[in-house]
Length: 255
Image (cartoon, rainbow, N blue to C red; front, top):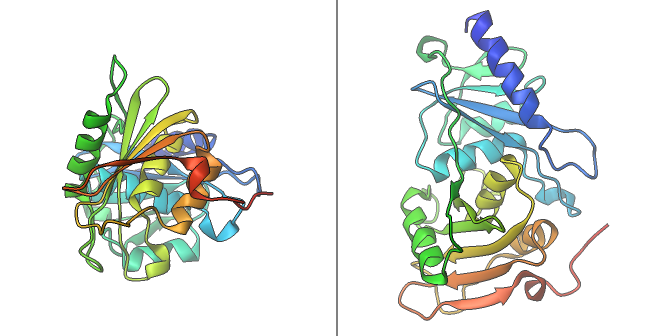
């Protein structure tokens, strides 16, 4: 990678790191994904009182990219040195293994283009989003789900108070501990964009059973990031259900 390109991307990813949510470690971290057409996007580290549920910056950017149908990542730039666990995680991800091009950069050296515009993951609506539209958009998002392990697509839509929407899908991985659910993928996209005031979350599980609800891990993350939000759950032909996030996890863990 040319030095001038690398330095431009470094400036962008280091600026993104300031949006990390790191109340427990105070160690911000971001990852930038450069696409084949030169467009780029960032993901940030999102910590949780339940430490194993942290969303690493790399997982956040991979999930955010996949959630909008982009898997054509040619390089990854980190806000500081690449970690061994990040190289290991890539091995079984949709992005696949990459060469180490610099202390803080992984990529495919022969296919890196000049960086262009940032990929904007949020979509703003001028009027308040109605429930039917929220469910429809979450259901539409499922087409991007990456589910080689389960064949169980899930889509989610996070809506902020200013009516900006961020979608997420479940992104599976050969190491099941690295799987990101749709709810957490949508949260990662929103937090990565600097959003903190989440009002609604729409969840669509077209293949779900009547009793399907967010998993325990997602409940904990949602409780910490958006405790006052309202959640709508769509299960295909069944009637959608509505819950407050605070109702989903009684006596939630906190520090």
